Image (cartoon, rainbow, N blue to C red; front, side):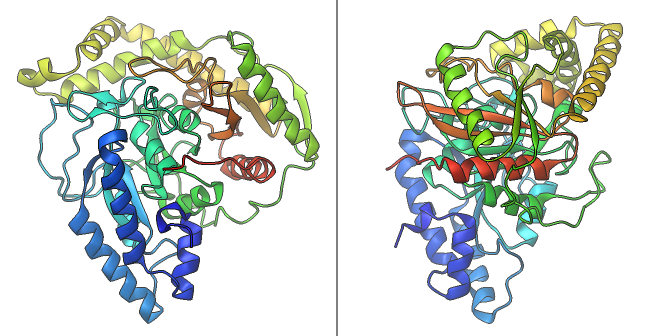
Length: 451
């Protein structure tokens, strides 16, 4: 049988039902793989071995009794170290944060726990989720699963590496400007930024309502399964969406026939490497072959970096309030410099940026009245080396507009490093994004790293 660590969450649960594999066996195999890979790839900041084994034993007994708590009972899962997990410190990749264990779960951790998932620990993040790599003084360097000389990007680099290497099939990550989609793209896995508020968050994020919480998985079906558990409102997050009471796996195999899809290779303003344009165009053509109507058209907005630059002032103020003054010098110098630059924006700048953001969101809603989906590259250039950042100007616009968007693997470049396509849906149509991603995955299945 395939190693349990390489099985999807869906496959694990199928084995649990048949009694051909137990949650304890699966968890032991995943923990062994984490231990074997941690020194080289460094996906995890902390692993709760004893807690995970205890949870796995409890899940095993529930399956023996025929009383699983959910469709992910006994499935190993982990959360990015920006999200609270009761009993573990939330260091956020920074020496400036205390080593104090959290007394409460974040909404995502609470729902995983209630569903019987086995909480493995916390995956590595860029410091405060701020930078585009996953390299910190606190936790060291996290490396790309396809090439240890390359970066897994950030800020959810640990989650993407863990998914790729089979270090827990269900990974919960965050995306405030591409932090799910870019690491997923460069690590060759699936990453979904759900509609804003689909997954509640607490405490509030530094970047406010740009911040989405969502799944990073090997398979699209696992992402839908995880979203079933994470979705719904929480009293601690007043921006969270009501629970739609739906199973996101329903309709996942409906394909894309009859959909009208827009494809933009550059968004009208991005300089993209020719190899990426060519390979993304090949993937887009798969949708034509599957029966969708695909039109090459730009969505018609200008580069939104000035909006993001101004809104960074809010993020800077929130970060400064969180860190005690005597610990501020422990924050990465590049982040401190970015906070200083962002703090120079005035209230008028921020108000103007919010107005421009509103116009961008309205424009894209009008665009999606004509198009069911928008397809773009994820990266404009190749997978970065360690210490460098990915060129990913395609992702942050859709944090501003709060639309669902995903990164789907589409193969490898000439250097053997992953390539990905971005799928963007209309507001709240996470189902369309998942459905199209599954259609592409089914038509062009991708391999994972072999250890």
